[in-house]
Image 1 (cartoon, one colour):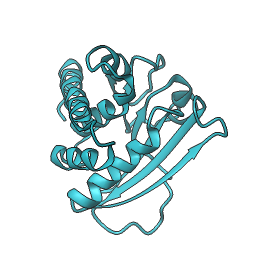
Image 2: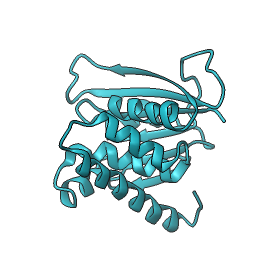
Image 3: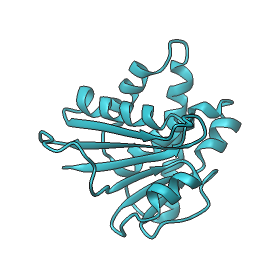
Image 4: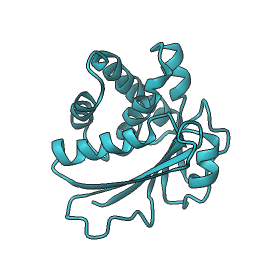
Length: 184
């Protein structure tokens, strides 16, 4: 099954890394195909950034995301620039710590930045919290594949923290799914 994913936030949140990790999980550990692209402003840290990813069971012949069906939004500016026009049939996982608008599509509110800071002691892993939530809410790749890709991608010495962040995201998504009365 083909999925087009759009990640958005501000520079420094790991938006591009998130797409790279998810693509790695799909290709290396879940027997799928993936292609990733990215966009960010000249003010790399703090400016809006976006990364797009296509994951498919079949080879991908056109690498541009044209109709995203999954959105991961980590900032208000990212929502306004890249998520406000999400179609009604899309799924959005948003960081409710930083995004105050809500889409017209199915939405899972994940307080990733708050939990990363308060529970894990490092807001820098909020993107990994969001990846855990994304996988739990959409099933786009399996959890074991995501964990392996995270461990391949993070700096040495941070593996335990990032694994906890991914598991926190899964836990938060389970609560969001329950609150929404929906199944993953």
